Image 1 (cartoon, rainbow, N blue to C red):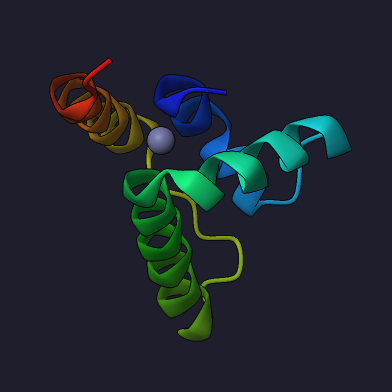
Image 2: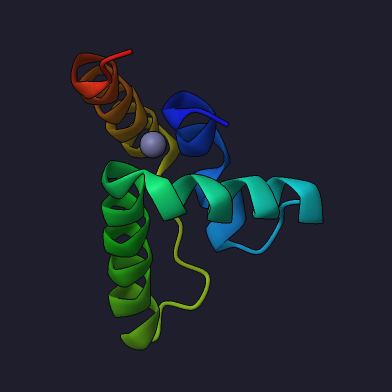
Length: 82
Ligand SMILES: [Zn+2]
């Protein structure tokens, strides 16, 4: 798994909606990729704050999340040096 794949699976992973093999790959990736670990922690933390305020079914509106993800992807692409 690379950072782009990680980003693609991230929201499903947080929802617990990924197959075990993907979950393992994600755990493995965050173990050595500090960048994605931070991203995962901050995303999860943000969602926890939202749900803690009683918005159990809260979902980021699609246009917003699309924008967010494309921005994250662009930033990732810039940061990833291979
Ligand atoms: Zn990564």
